[in-house]
Length: 333
Figure 1: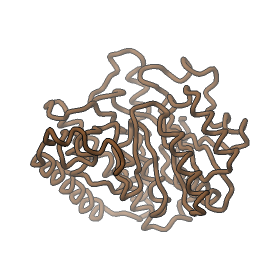
Figure 2: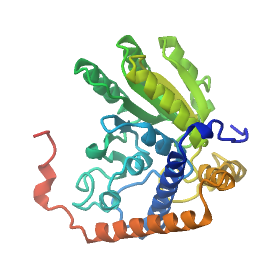
Figure 3: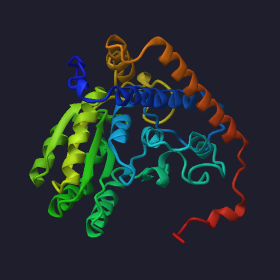
């Protein structure tokens, strides 16, 4: 997706929300960059799947959701955790395998959870949380609860049969679930066209009578407005929607480094997408429209830096779990 980003419809979004979208993306980016900087020290006890370059989708989705809405994410879930307001010290402590982690150091990067802020869980199993999200949506309907469920996943999940089973069941029961596909074109090192006969994930929903749309996942305004419409539709009893967000991960599939040397994608391709950085493009746009200024940008960026580094310090001080913790939290009390 190479079209110019123009943030069409931004004037329909309050300036305060536009600023929050920008700074939420910036917080996600800087947190991921700090993780990438710290990871080579080998103190973190798990692999990390970073979302650098993909910040627009979780930032936009989170700002549309209401307090009683919930998200189920994939193995690349840091963005949703941060956007939902998950504890930063809880994130870093989790990566360090510490007791202060969001799952007491047991889940690691791929199994982040922050139920108090709506992130019910994430999973290393590709497409693994999609049917669970659909089940949660069914529970909401049975309880007559006007809430929305988000199933967030990558294009690799569309390789799995359970994705289609979930679309079918959500359509059959007219459930308030929004399927958000962050299509970064690669499942590990395999391009979408090497795995799927057609690269039309959004169109596949129509086979089940579910509206499907493909949008620019680096245009945070387009993501926000599209998701807002889908959430409004779900709350009114209109059923599920599939949103395919075309985006790109800058770093390797798993880990903090560049991986162009592996040969599955070119450095020119990566640079082309970096020129479409969702944060830089939106920041420049907001500055041009005088919605943010240099002083606000500097103060907010400094605040984000302080929060991140304070979180790292607290995480480092957290204790490792005692042996007795091994069998706790296995079952729901």
